[in-house]
Length: 151
View 1: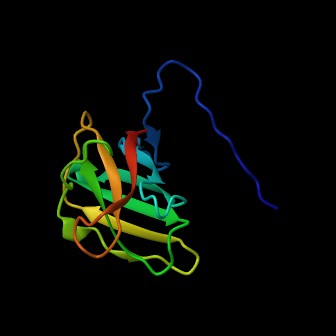
View 2: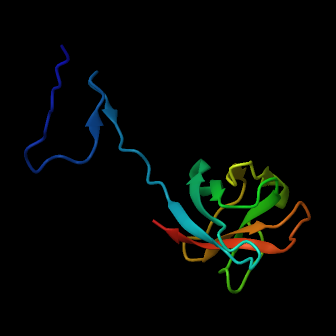
């Protein structure tokens, strides 16, 4: 048998900190900034391509983790991807070192995923987007793009 105990606080003196059970205090978790993007195809030869991306600030805002998944892509394709400054319409420079974004292969299912940790900060007031490129060549034809929206 499993027992579940729920404890609540009543009163106006709760300051948001939580006790650790040993008489100490545990501070609430630090605020995390997350952006998300829905990627759509910009390739007339592969209009079904789609994907999702997320970016999470880490290391006190001095780095971010970027995650990407795509589906309905052409199997066997070797792709590059990046977080860029600006919008899909305007384009913009790559954020961080382009070599830090791993290339990925599209599997037989037409799906792929990639994760990168980028040593660069992000400005909360600046627009960003994620772009996926057709091949292994740096900055080759862009085939998918999505605006990163801060959550």
